[in-house]
Length: 194
Image 1 (cartoon, rainbow, N blue to C red):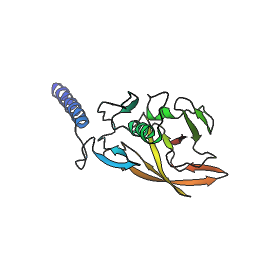
Image 2 (spheres, helix red, strand yellow):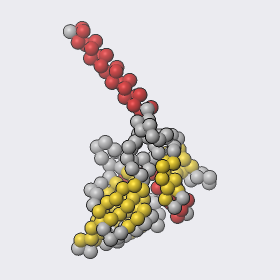
Image 3 (cartoon, one colour):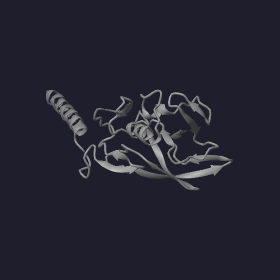
Image 4 (cartoon, rainbow, N blue to C red):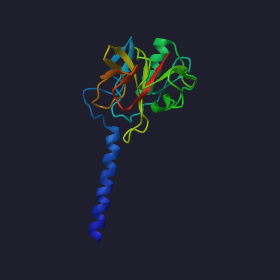
């Protein structure tokens, strides 16, 4: 009985050490945290390593909060600030919090000072729209990205922090059914537009 208890304690100690080491190790040796991996209109996308990595807070020169460095929120807020000259009234919050489910399709989201559209919506997504993704069991904070290209049946997005081996660009099918546009990805709650 004593040997079994010591074995269980030993396994728990090893698992705990492994967990903390995995938080410190960059799993993808092809990139370093903070390395530029892509850009949209001159605004850089940086590699973040593992999804939960935090490397301090990013602030604009005027003190405006851009978010936690190399997280998805930091990229979209930095893009909107630098490229679209837009500051959100509520400069804090997790990715999923950018979408307010109580706002009707096409109405203003006053927290973000952006027009909000549901997925699906009567309004087709446009380049520079900010996509908001729901939380999941493995990611309770959700995700945000920016629309970089739109065709008749596809939407391309650019994102920061898709995970150590994720791509900064993805494409989703775009469907028009009964006068409404839907991005075929069940996690996408909707999009925001300046």
